[in-house]
Length: 393
Image (cartoon, rainbow, N blue to C red; front, side, top):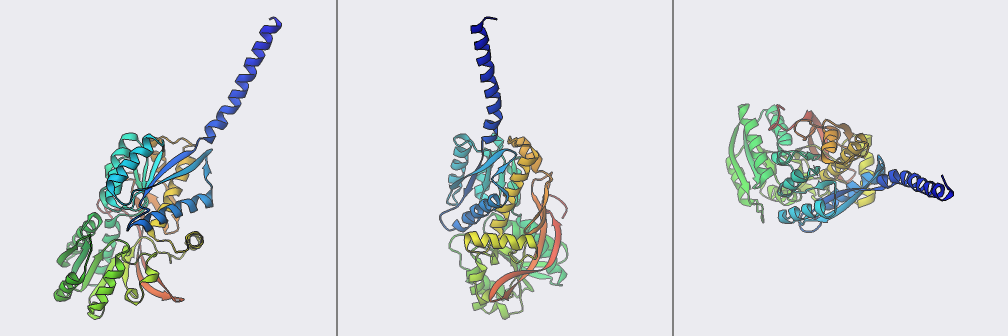
């Protein structure tokens, strides 16, 4: 080989060696983008702010990089409008090249993104929307929040255990409310109870006065209530104003009525209220105490159920990416997420491998004042509860 050929071959070899050395570093540096679609403006803005805060808190605690991939959040505000959710999901997948979607503050918003998740084979981590059917709308949906029937079924069980056999249901007239109404009635009446009437309050500009008067007239042993987070204050105020707190009617509600973000501002009407739910900021564990303290340091408020679901959603993605060794195609990530189990600030949780829905404890709580603040204090636990609409629970 002449000198010129030798030098050319040496230069080519050096270029190949340099390129071979650079390629893995380039691959590792490619971020995994997560499209976070949440309401950051409008009446449901607190949902979005809790979700983003908790997701960023998890990354701060556990590191933004896993399996050589840096997790990057791309946050978009849908204003809780389903058409906007759908448009943003499409833009995030097509233009921003996100490899996972997360957030979804209400059921219609999660459903709006589901077809895009299914077509693009992009995992969709649902962190709030609680209607049972959500996970059935795309094989790439995984839920880390809760389902309304999951919680309501155990509320019905607890009421029956107290010996009550007559009830009225009072719910907001939208997907989760209808889910709650149907679940409570089915469980309660299957065990010999009687739902005297099912009352539905319009979602827009709700006024509970006429409905609460109906409850007073019917005189049930139990009143079961489901309203979205943030609406509990006006409901409880009207409940007390009409003297129902002294009527002997047992009020028990889904935990959204006294969610931890708004509970400190509710005042005396909330004291003593019974609820069933999957999370309380007062949950007695070292992990939860750290979560609450770290979240409060970052946000200035205690976390509510939206925050813990977002924290767990990030844990799910973090650990799934670790299991796949950094592979982020939808099939690999979803396979890694199925059956995953871990200790959450709310207690032990897992992802059902068949339904991709969360399995978790449901707690019966009572609002108590401790050190001058109101807290949802857990006093009874139903362990490892599944959505009863999808399995025997």
